[in-house]
Each structure stands twice: as C-alpha cells, then as structure tokens.
Length: 117
Image (cartoon, rainbow, N blue to C red; front, side, top):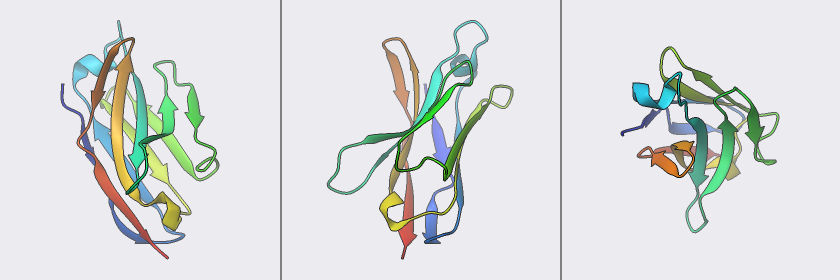
C-alpha cells in the first residue's frame, strides 16, 4: 500500500501551505476505513503526531498546531489534507501521511516543509 504525500515547500513565516495525501481505495473502504493522520519529524527530534482524523471524521490536534492547522478527508477522492496556516519556523519538518487500522499501519514517503523566519 502506497501513500503519496505532496504540497510541501519553502514558505515565509505567517504564510500557508496545504499538504495532500493520496491513498489507495482500500484505505477508504466503506467496510473497513482507516484512521488517517499527519506526523512530522524535525531534524534531531522524534516523529510526532500533528493531527488525526478518524474514519468517523473525529479530529484531534497537537497543542502546538491547534487553531492553525486543519485536517480533512475526502473519502470519494481518497485523499486526506492538512491545511496549515500561520506557519512558524518551529513547523519546519518532514511531514508524513499515516493510515492506521488496528495493528495495520502504512506510511507515506514524507514531504519537506520549511518555514523561513
């Protein structure tokens, strides 16, 4: 199973970016949909959860991004997005798309987000 993340780039602090992850149909199956999430990993730091959206559309965010980031999923298009507003230099990291159902978990290849101050 391959998750394709895109949308990263270099932006100035205060600007916005939108990340998109495309996943196979099985991830968004009506019968057994996966929870989807975005993680990030900055240099020298552990990978951390940024935002999660469950199969039932419940969302949760890291405290550091609440009020600035919004996660959404489009089951018909088989995508999960992360709208990132008011970006800060601390948001600089490689962002990874994640799909999880029980013990089954898949990761995307990561997309670099660099925020210049």
